[in-house]
Amino acid sequence: MSSNKGPAEHNISSSDLSAEQTSALYINTQKQASVSKLPLLILCLGSLLLLIVLILFSGDKTAIAFADEKSMVIENAKVNVQVLSIQSAYTKQRKVYGLIESAQQANLAFELSGVIDQTLVAEGERVIKGQVLATLNKQRLFAQKKELDAVLLRTKADAKLASLSAMRTAELVKKRLEPEQRLDEANAALDAANALVNEVTARHESLDVELQKSSLVAPFDGQLVSKLLDSGTVVNAGQPVFSLMAELDLDARIGLPSRSPLALDLGEHYALSYEGEALPAILISLAKQRNRATRAVDALFKINPQAAQKRYLMPGDLVSLSVDVEIKKQGAWIPINALSNGVRGLWTLFVIDQSGGSQTIQARSVYVEYMEQERAFVTGAIAQGDLLVVSGLHRLTPNQVVHNIQVINTARN
Image (tube, rainbow, N blue to C red; front, side):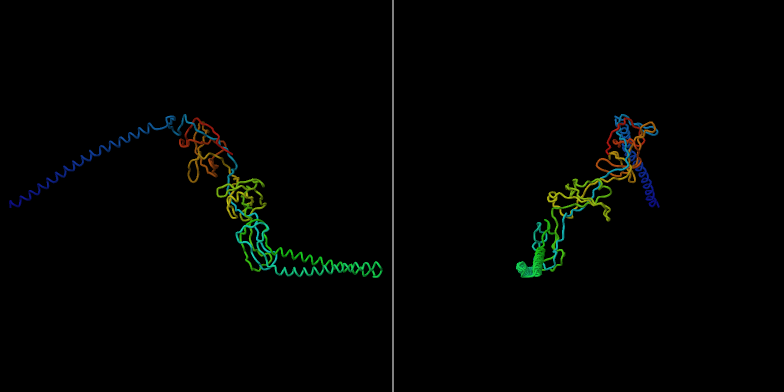
């Protein structure tokens, strides 16, 4: 029995010793945690004190700002303002586009029907005025010419015989050997023979004209854009054979919007734009009616030939012209620097409100209608004579009271 109690008593004392060790270990752990948090707490307090010192000693030494119930005052700092001038409209530049076209372009055709004997030029070839481009078969015309030559010889011979006969008859009548009626008949025969000679001569001249028209010639200097028919083709009168275009005689046709044509003068020089380069041109025509499709007024500009050759211009190239367009909208021109971001697509600007006896900054929301270079035309909550703040916007907030206002003039018409 005694041998069984020994181990039990030993187990209980071992369990009690383990609990005491656990409690001591927990207490030591808590002490170490408290000791480790102390430096962190000191660091946080130091950072807070440093932040307070920076806030107290930061700021512009030249301007002393303080707060009251509703406003802040900036002293000894200049605020540049501009007096707003409200306008009923503004003018903006609009770029309009047009195409280069040939001043002369024609579809060349024979005036006669027949078979094309030969074509003497190729497509894309440059030709000069009067150069023969193609010919018709002339065998039939040459045969007719030989026939007319023979008829002309016969009629001239008949006319000569009639003339001799009339002369003899006149001598016989003078000697009273023939009645006067015979002389009248001889003269009439002579007139008929001469008329037949004239008729055959006219037919001969007409045939010469047909022979000339059997050759197709270039009416002006240019380049053959296309060759429509080849040798051996039977053509009708007026059927196109070549398409010829004047190469350096170029025009630019541009559709002008609204009332902008009223600002252009015929015969004046204007600078068109081609691939970013200036292209000198002269206004030679303004249409008297609007294009039904585009509602624009067509303006025709004559391109300087040297400039066209230098830039390798050709029909179909795109050119542009900057024109002034007047927009009816009430607003004012302001410097772009006077604008700051707003909400919902609007912009914000600051004006000086002097209604309360003090000079207070007020924010106004405006809409930018047009912007160019360093200025913008705006509409919205602005009025004639408002003092617009044009510089130092980053130092201003609504309801600030400011002194030392300096009025400057930055507006342009």
